[in-house]
Length: 315
Image (cartoon, rainbow, N blue to C red):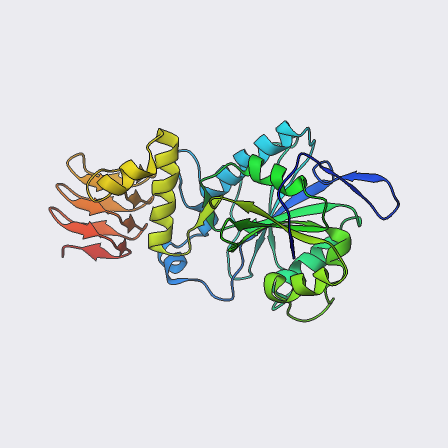
């Protein structure tokens, strides 16, 4: 791959010689939410990781939508749907949307098993023109950076495929891909996008990287990952410096999330934890760096620390 510093240039020539703007030609955001098997964390919380709370009013998918909507408005993109690609084992859920929304969320189950991320993107490319672009990323992450800036940087590179890497060269999961390049991926069989498809595409197409200082989001496939993502998100929302958090991280709370439908006694202490709808935290209980699931109960005067409470604590 050719490394290239970003420049304020967004046009690239299409196959017909016309100038193609990769921002205006970005037709969808594809969030990869499937997995071969559900993680122990997902099984414990009993819902899609996309549907976990980030604030009292927003879930993970809501934060994606707000950031993609900001991108669409900033670059005058009239329609930019978010296609959430789920595995067959993940149940669908209802999302309230308006018909005329600029950014719509479409929950879709992968029609083919064992295609891999590269195979899936190749199949989706069949629904678009050669010079259309798709932005793809791992769905299960809390966005802690500004996707508007990330997408702008990706689009500023004249390339068929552009990937975000950290400054040390570590690749991330965020890519902007031209559909014509995706058609070089095999139509059948398992194909991993990073390990198999990208090296093959790079033989015939322009594949480049954009370097950034920090991740745009933090993965949430585990309890620690989810809570770290929440701490970083709320730290930035409150304008707290990272050095301040590192110094105080053992005792200063950054957030507490209590979903509607959870029963939390007023004397309970909730420290950097999530209490899901249906959960119960009784009088004088202490919950620290934990998630209490819908079936979880923390009894009177008991403590839950660094754990997933999916049954009971204190019986």
